[in-house]
Image 1 (cartoon, rainbow, N blue to C red):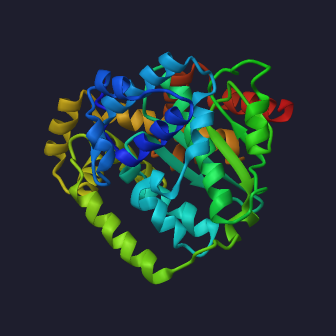
Image 2: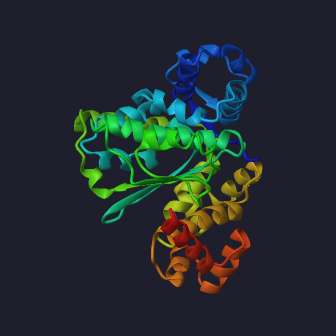
Image 3: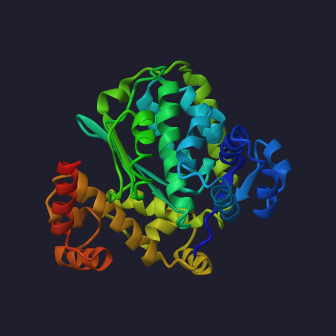
Length: 345
């Protein structure tokens, strides 16, 4: 399994606060995860993704709480997002704040990749989780989505602002527990969906925020870029490569030499580093292409040849073969199933 990068101590603190509120002594769990409790007092500290994932797994096992991720989202604060939280606080509108997620989310941690797809009437925000532990993954997704919704309501000073729908790939926690999601999020929630995503009315992007300060935002963004430059490039490489591939595929480009140049290295250096991580470039390209293909097929009416072209395939037939190899169905069959789920939901 590729090394899952690093995480800001700010993200860890949210889980610690939630655990303490539930009467859980986190000290022994931190020790088992290989973490020193003193790390919690450092605003600039980062921990390995392995340690973070292990801590959440230990917390899940100890609490036996099927709603752990959802309930920890109740403890989100601006500081939970490191400097990104304070950048969003200084933005003028909710749309401005959301636009800052992708460029700076790695400051919070290499936990996943956010994709934003604005539309005329609705906007879609999806998150591809990088963690693979089958116990941790659904709780982490629940936490991220719950935190987003709660924090956005606070930013806009609008406690009733809600998504129009949330889809989660995780199984239902049980019919008796599903209401915990709908009550918090104020919208329909679909489990065992193809993607982890939420949709909301595009008009919400214009919601004014409570503390806009353009000068402060520019200062904080300069600091954020400085922090990005100092992050350990080896531990965040896979996330950085996937993000670079995603940005290039938007323009239908998938060339490794361009990705390497974007990351400030030669193609040979990129190949060597990815080999060390156990993640060849082609496998990362395939992963990002597949995720973007599923997204485009499920959420747009673009003709399949155009989807193939956008993802850098020179021939539609090649796209068909690769998609079916990854998903077990053709692009057309995937789109039909996605449409059926949307109608039944």
